[in-house]
Image (tube, rainbow, N blue to C red; front, side, top):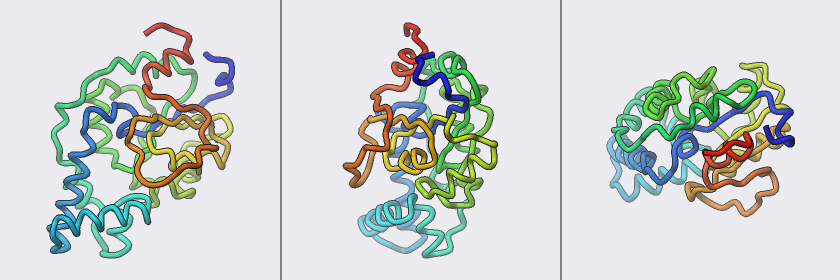
Length: 221
């Protein structure tokens, strides 16, 4: 293990566009279904639904949180609908051995739900890699980057954030993690949305998760 990361005892990973590359374009299919859901259930034209979707995303941290706050949307109904996508674009990228070699606990922290996460992890060969998935239901619908979501994660799994590391593709979701003492890793793959020039809370910026894991484990791919 790279000496700088030797104190890390808990390795926390986001799911979408982090444990698989953004280039496979799974999330755009989910994003399109969010627009379709809003258009259908709020009686809006697609363009207006798209605008509202992004407004809620930026104002509430995720589209679902805005829909719940403003329209009383059933989260289970919404998540079942938007996650009803084919996963044939995903493949096993050989991350299981590398993540498994990290010393300590491994968790997934996602704004999605656990059933969807299980499907993704199975498809990419990581079904047995993680201790648990901390999902949006577990956060009581306070999604990343709400600081309460991070505190809830730490409380649920007795995590000392000063010995934890969080890997995420959305830089803004790393700021609350850094604020409580976590080491932060940003997967800079183009999936970041919205403003956010401040990157002072990011410890490591990487383009490819597998390559970075090889580097810190001091192994060859």
